Amino acid sequence: MAQYLFSVLDDTADSGTEDEMVAIRAFNKQLQADGHWIFAGGLAAPSTATVVDGRAGEPVFTDGPYLESKEFMAGFWVLEIPDLDVALRLAAGASKSCNRRVEVRPLLEG
Amino acid sequence: MTGVGEVITRVHREEWARVVATLTRRFGDLDLAEEMAAEAFATAVERWPVDGVPPNPGGWLTTTAHRRGIDRVRRETRRDEKHREALMLSEPTEPLGAIDDDRLRLVFTCCHPALAVETRVALTLRLVGGLTVPEIARAFLVQEAAMGRRITRAKEKIKAARIPYRVPSRDDLPARVTGVLAVLFLIFNEGYLSSDPAQEAVRADLTAEAIRLTRLVRELMPADGEVAGLLALMLLTEARRAARVSAGGELVALGEQDRGAWDRKLIAEGHALVRERLASGRAPGRFQILAAVNAVHTDAPDVRDTDWSQVLALYDQLVRLDPSPIVRLNRAVAVAELDGPAVALAQIDGLPLEGYHAFHATRAELLRRLGRSEQSRAAYDRAIALAGNTAETAYLTRRRDQLGRV
Image 1: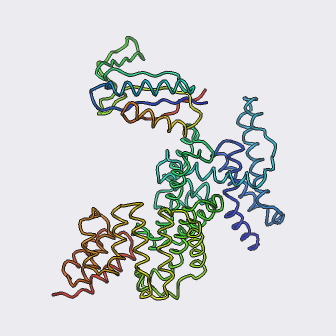
Image 2: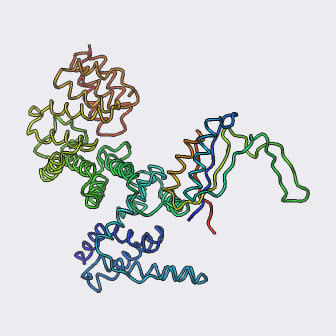
């Protein structure tokens, strides 16, 4: 088994609508029933982010996201999936349920 | 010596995919499989002229590559005893069927939809076709180093993202077969009419490679109608190759081709495949219909014998399946033969194909037949500006310059 990160790509300010939330909950239930579920969550707006640099001496705090871009990660799933064929099929369902595009990336093993 | 050289070339063509495919399954690593297969062939080049060609060359190559692979894994995983033992498989002798499945797995992995299209083409030519990286780079006018990186990155992605080494599930299969055929057709088309003015107009090496790979896929999936259709389409197109470009390097239109120069053997094989699909009674897909269109053309001893109503009926069928502007454009060529150029022109005017050279070339021919010379000239000008193929540019230029100045 491998683990994959599904990132929800968004470029609008409005978070999930009621319909989208219903669809996401149903999708999550199925993921749990099928044994794929590890963890998932929605993220607050990029403007709520703080970047911390603690590499040298006193940590430096920067208000806002590390990258100013039109698109940002609005939520994510971390799932247990045997291979990319299955991952792509699940990601199609994920994209449909949250009504956003989804990026699929494998986690490094070990 | 030359005898052995020829044998090695032939064995390379016939056995490369099988060796890579078998090793990939045994070691679970495409990169290793490719490298060990290449080493095994290099060893054959050294040894066979001295020791003689072994009775079962394919088996010899697989065994040699497998042993090299085990040596490599031993060296690299000395610290990881468990991992090493897991890979220390004996040399199993599978029945032929299982090995053939491996080659099919290899084809589907190379044509995986998570890879960019140009990457699928390169990977298929390298791992299934056995072309070298410099050969593939030359074929697509890409720097050798860049092509090498593209293939390396693809293998890394296959490994890290876990693109599975298997024939897709039944749900995924139709779309995935379509994807494989698209890759093969792309290779063929680049050879059929090179899009690059710096290349030869017709690239016989690429069309031959595409046909060889399609024959392999046909062998592995004999029941698939579209696989048969694509092979028939390629054969019936390839059959006309010698007649398609004049001695002066100009493209020769279908109606003007020397039909005596068509390859009768390829035509017979293509026709047999088309008949096989007709006899199946199954609804044909896109490639089967296009193959049937080409069967009608290659069936006519003279262009005047062409059964245009049959061609039109086939395009009507294709439009229902794929109502794209390009299909409508090709259909209009048959319409022009049956109902005249004015009807055909009315059908293609307004198609959203402004950037497609064949659209302007078709319009130019229809306008010429209608006596609208100035408009025809303008359409030729646009077609010439957009066409990348040298032989086609030469043909279009001559046709344009035949128009009289008023």
